[in-house]
Image (cartoon, rainbow, N blue to C red; front, top):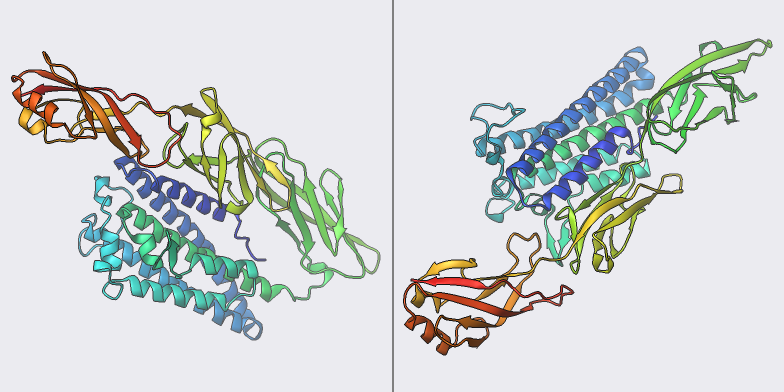
Length: 520
């Protein structure tokens, strides 16, 4: 039986990737670099688990081919070609990571061991190494970018030829796409879009993600090969084995656990009976028991039962089965792209993701929400009167039903008052002749959003002199003359600063704090 792309393992990988992308929108700090590195190591560990499963699947196919070469010989050939190609691609990408870590002096020349921990995580902050490695000087013909692209195309063509599953084919075409990417009306090669300007820690995580995709698709295809090799097997009643096919092994509290229980082969002239061990009889369709167990509490659950058939001589036989499933609490993740609060008058970018649900199937409701599509939203909470607001995610589940998830509360703040500045300072000592050459500025220091402002006028107050009204952002000749003639040690105050927004804005204007200058 083929594994679903929405398996618990794949859900976890998808979730980790969404969290990474949200982190990429933040300013890269040492803590974030450490998080990237932790993500890369976790992804590598998860991939190792998939590799163990792939080895087991391939060993199963090999054993069957030894026992029945006529039936399983061609399947083994395809499995071998798949595994050889996957190993070659995977190992090449592993080599890329090693070479870039050498370039960053994280590991010494001659070593190919990637450490599990890095003492100085700042070594992974360089945004130039990935680009220099894949396309030095922007030239794909000089780096490893062309080789990476060729291997992506080759592997995609090979694995696409090995399946007719439309869902898997669609996933392959997306996961291993080398098509140019359009960003802000500019078409960019896929590898430049993925590896330009990101820190080395992020580039390594991206490569680990591709390695995970290689192993995941390898697992899907090996499972399909093994399933197709046995689906037409003819078994007699005394060799029947019960088989459990759960729809999902990780589900949300409140949703029913669903599974199918079938016989590997059954007599199509009669239908079996399926019972849970509490005696409850389950409906049967085409020889398959349809299981539905209500859930409430979370945690790992064990369940069991038996399939009963009646032989031609009237004897009944029971075939026991058992299984496990996990019940998890409903969970959704809403990540403010820039910060953990929302500001009035500003388009706050927000992303939402729900494990196991495609981005196009999720939605968000609350004051000031505007959808950008595929899980991306803009929130302008200007209409909120209080200090907090709640936003509620929902999603259309795989069975077509709509499910609402617990709402989350966000703090709502006003944009702070801007600050008057000269040379980026609000209180400074400066030579009076130098001062008059500078512009008066207004900005929001230490604010997470970039809000360009233009000074349109201000008032200059010099001790013992009348105030000077100035238009624009430079000192008028009269104000400049008064400043240059003022004695050293005089305190000049620039206040009543007027400004305008460079772009249309709903942010209320507030009077900037004055600038205090001590003349030298």
